Image (cartoon, rainbow, N blue to C red; front, side):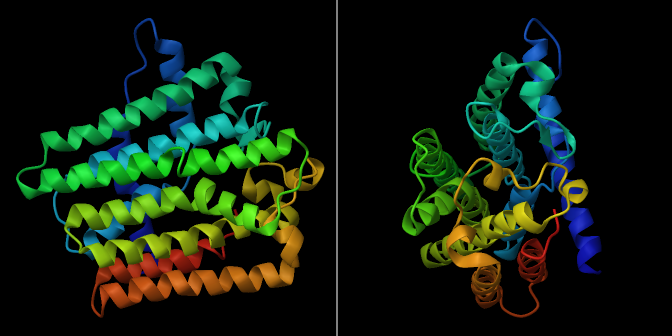
Length: 303
């Protein structure tokens, strides 16, 4: 099976799992439920649940205990995008070629939709206890800790905090600060996906730590590609306006490195992440081979 065919299968699986855990749009809270479903169903590559599933399979995981975590991590990602797009943060009007949630539903319902998805994510992850038995329950606890920690103030929210604060004060971040933002705002959820999959499959502590390192390298490379595409990307392919960083007077890592060096650093980090997976998976591991190809594809993407 080719990589494209495998990716299609993984994506279909992630879509089906996510759909099964999303709530029906009914009741007095129908508006916010509509906004939540609108955001989640607006497209997207489902990269985090795909990585989580591939990591789980790479370490020999079988069964459905991984599914609540696949849905939960995508809900967290979707909530973060809703809030990122709002006028108080990035102030974007398009996401994946469609009006952003606050444009479609208003800032009040967008804020609540993000809150709703974050809370629903943890409710969903906890449903893993309905599936897990024996040692799997301990693994679920460990995976929930990683998911919550990497999404919170010492992860994604912490990175967002510094980013927003600098914007508000119209202060340029230095290179160290920018890397802190990238590591937390972008890489933390990728780390959580790779680590959670490994944990749920029963990987050893040193293997889980290595998957964290792979997620960190990949996350920074992924964000670098975002920065590059914001300068030289195609607006139609991206589904959102380009040049937003320049318009907002925002310095990125690209501002310090330049395009050429940024591309070199991106390739180095991508190769580092791929090498870790290759080492851990060994030969003949289909999920590991898929994950390695996925890493390489992500830093060459055009959208």
